[in-house]
Length: 104
Image (tube, rainbow, N blue to C red; front, side, top):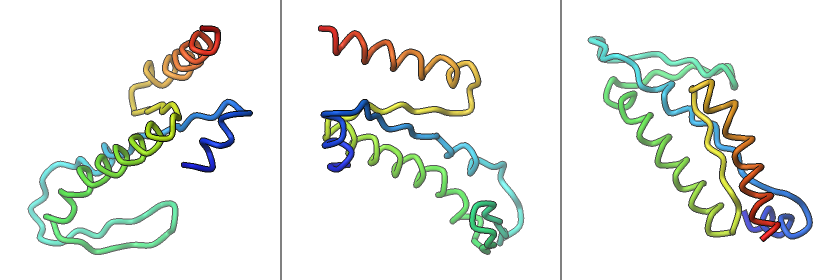
């Protein structure tokens, strides 16, 4: 984050967080073990039902920590979720806010 903050003095830098925590909010399952497949790495992992339930909260906590680190380094953060309207409007909103801030 510090390196990005340094770039922010001469470039327009902001952090985009894609909120993927929803991907782990699955309905309760009756099986004791679940096999999950990571499409990015191509690897599978077997985990307990309890471990699966914690992934959403762990993901949100990690994203909150990244957002706080960015803010601590005076970087703007754009969080995008699955809401299509928000995904369309959010980049335009942050662009306008940043232009107004620089003009002031």
